[in-house]
Length: 161
Image (cartoon, rainbow, N blue to C red; front, side, top):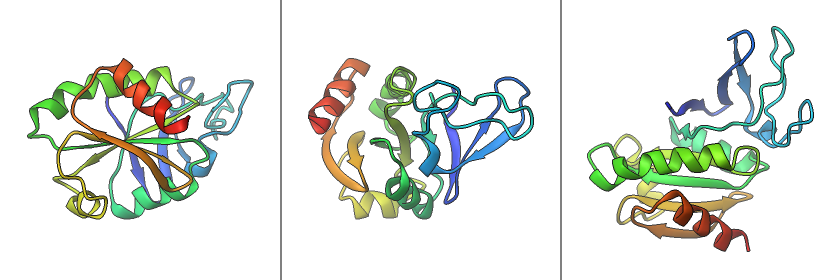
């Protein structure tokens, strides 16, 4: 499962009914649509419900990251990683499991510290993978090291408790 692309305006989600790409502002990620908690809204073409975002978001820039943290109504789990990091690659499927299981309750974002070193520096990420939980733009908790989906969910629960 590929991560969804982002920019400073939001993300692009393909409609499950007609396939049309729809821009979803970060501020709408927690909206309720067609009875689905956390749905991203309706398709602009066919009006089908887009459903909650169930894949990690690939952060494309500092501006996209800042916009996500500033406007997401849902908590954001950030995976700071790099493609050359073996443990990061091993934990990627676990991150995807968390995104799928927590769709509509949590936004999962991936920050490639090789492509965006400024974010790693700004958040003083000393080792990867590092996972951090943000609410309302503020970091609540972080942990370094690979872990299974259940361990990642425990990290999130600790942060939100």
